[in-house]
Length: 244
Image (cartoon, rainbow, N blue to C red; front, side, top):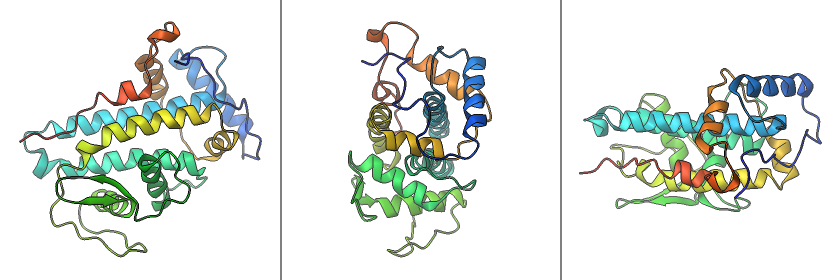
């Protein structure tokens, strides 16, 4: 098991990144404020912020699903929140430099969850299967757009507009194991892949608070290597089933 203080592969990007010197100072200052371990690369801190932020979103999903009538009142907002976490992961994998989000961020995020090697995966790749049907990258992306628009519309993609007459309550139940394993793969890839580190450096990630960084350190402990849980351990604890 890697130490909590294990850095990603690059101390600084090997490609041109606008305002990197300023960004680097910002992330290090944020980590100091959060009480993070010393000696961390700026990109390690950025990754910690992203993963800590995704954990915050997952906690929000859990709270929304605890509503006694979640299936009818809060399930769609819960899926919208989860979809934003997938889009954040996809943004970092793509190296999206735009201020605004992109449908492509969600697509890449879902493709990452669908397989260890997302190269060559198509938008019609199946990500999950419930008792009702299979759900592809394109369908889950469209559902995220639908949920984010308060259930009023979907965005037309190459495979057409999807119509969701009733949201499948099993979708989110399938997601925690995929997200947990996907984040472990992402963290491990950052420690070995120069390209992945460069994409993270290029991605437009705005740190509005120190809590996600602190949360990441707290979730994984500050002790010896044997006590540092994997992200699968941390995120695998979420239970998003609605029950009967």
